[in-house]
Image (cartoon, rainbow, N blue to C red; front, side):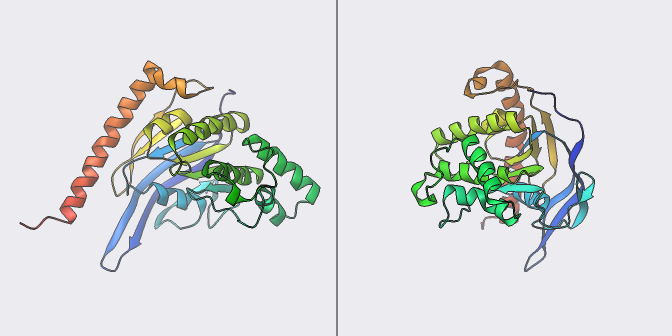
Length: 273
């Protein structure tokens, strides 16, 4: 794999996010500073409720930070930005459109000529391993195939940054493994900047070039680890001593934050005696 570029693609400066509640407020994120280089595959892990999805939504421009600023190649993100492609856990496909129709949708919105968008869509459908299913409708596809359509649709629009919100969480273990290895091949080929959320340490280690671990709420960065496992990767990397060493390091931090999160919940809702 080629050496990663060193330019900063996306930068978070002193990001905090506070949500108003009926009584008081909830601080989801506090003082997040993060710089992501062009071509990095950054996976964010942490305890439930630590603000991982909130962080991704901020980078996508779906919501605004309470304080701080997010820059995409030096320009502030002010709202939903087509330079960022988002993949959700749920597939969000148009059920009345074929695989080709779904993948071409963004290209059509950009007014790209029909022949050109068909060519681009076809290339990306093949990239995700769905050649032959171009005229199939979503209700004829498995969950894993639907998610591959979602990935092809996002990639076809050629975003500068790909944002993934636990895209494989709802899939069975075998399908998840296949898509993880396919994701690695796509990353090696396209070298997109990717920010990916997961609860799975194994998934984080298999996919990433860098792992960011978040604290219990309010979410801060607890640890920022370079994943130096060599590419190309497949499931066999999980047998290496370096993999086990990294997994132990990450687990120790995540476990401590999960315990802290549980203690905080118990303190907020004490049992009656």
